[in-house]
Image 1 (tube, one colour):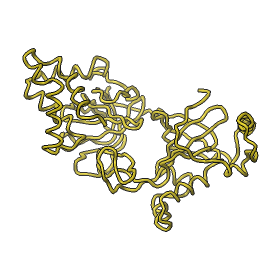
Image 2 (cartoon, rainbow, N blue to C red):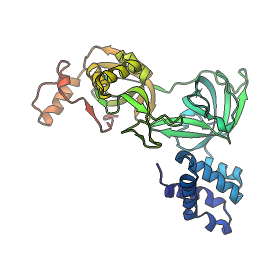
Image 3 (cartoon, rainbow, N blue to C red):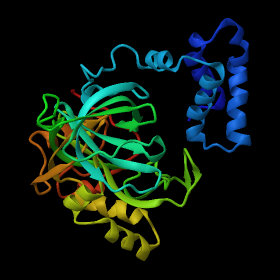
Length: 360
């Protein structure tokens, strides 16, 4: 998270070109930092909402031409109502974009602050969207196409979503109109390989309870919102290897159940019985290491988000994989047992460092 000083510097970069010369000192970095401090520490505005609140205050107080201001933030290549930006190209965090997409699926909001949440899609792919209640947006309907003007791209941990805000304009299109989206793309990729490792923060985890946050709770705290009891979730952050490259894969709770038979309720019972959350990660490791899978799903940053998984063969290695590993063990002077499907459990199976795909 940025410091208050960094937020003040960013806001100054945004508003300075729109201020008159006699306003420059009133809204320099020091003045903006003081304003941020008062909002956060005096008025107790939530840290994640302070930037928008301070920015709106400055724009109104300084009499900034807001249409020109927001246009300058959007830039010239973020889509128009005539030529909307494809969802697959919405990969710049904080960018204001105009897209045309169909409501693919609506989910039940977890909090009153969320008006609607779900998936939108166009020919290039799909993306999560969130519409906040305070923005007073219209009610969106599934299987209906809309042009979303001035929505914001949000990125967290390699995942992109669209946020509908108070400045967003939403135009509905008839289902038989030329603008209506027909087939929605998936942007999926497929990978086949052997499960060689499970990364830390897999198994039974806790996520922040704030409706705007999905961060994992560590040592009882969310990095964004501080102390937090958290809500249980289940996932696997795994690494598959085809003998030439590796692919990091993210299995949600549903997909974890598909490949292991363990659902969230079962995982919580396992942890409760042993008084140890890590028992779930160890069990998943025992079940998966050495098994070959074919997985499909969209690439989100370095992770493949698995939405389909097939157990290609029971604990069988890719052609040439055994020889490749033997060569590496020999190169580094490893004289332990040979790496086979029967004794791979004797070797380390978890790690913390990210994996870079070799050979790609």
